[in-house]
Length: 274
Image (cartoon, rainbow, N blue to C red; front, side, top):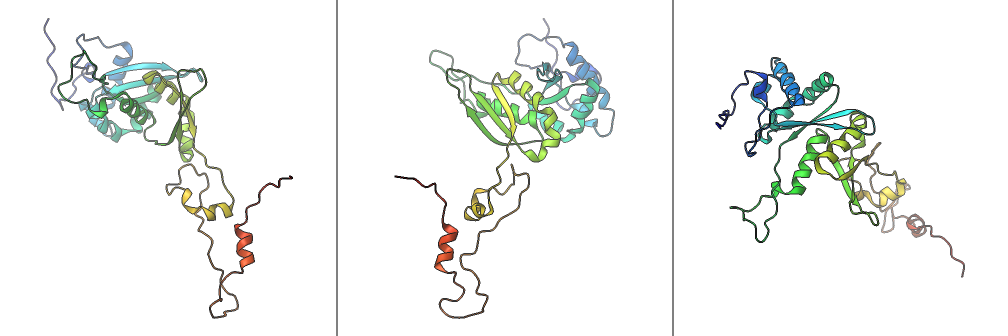
């Protein structure tokens, strides 16, 4: 059996089948599916435009279809070579929007990553130490970054229920981008669960608005990037000494009365009856 010659990098695609680039590490070369052929043909036609002419030198490795159970829509996860992901992102989100209009489905471009197992006793050892980028946690983090791009994760937490083996991962997005990401939240969940097998919930991080006195007492508890705030306004700490309206001078001038300072710092506590 003769092996197909490996295409050189930066070689221009002359036909739609040239867009599909299989993984060289796999022993059996699978023929392209109908979905992959349709994507390759669409990308090859879009390479004729000046805005997406870089597609002449880019490829896809595989594609899978995911059904969004909440809405009944379709989501397409397209795996592209890891080294070509930077070039794809330069054309996004215009490229993904054009594919979504043509295929009538949500399209996510995900970089192809490989997970290496841990070294175990009795198994063949690796020639070099396993890099962190090949661990399962880092690969899943990369999948999440590619799915929600150009958005960003502002907070994460994992909840464990009683007598439940699989935990639930909560991923919080910035509410300032709600108009763009709200319609894709079910597709995010379906695509991430299909890639990782984890239970995930996408939510928006919204901080509760406290009183002005509480914000003055703790001015540093609020982050500087305003993520999670719907209406953010900087509140400066209250002055330590009040200004003297009479313009007096001396050692006690401009200093607030002791009773006023105690009243400001007093915290109302519930009364207990003995």
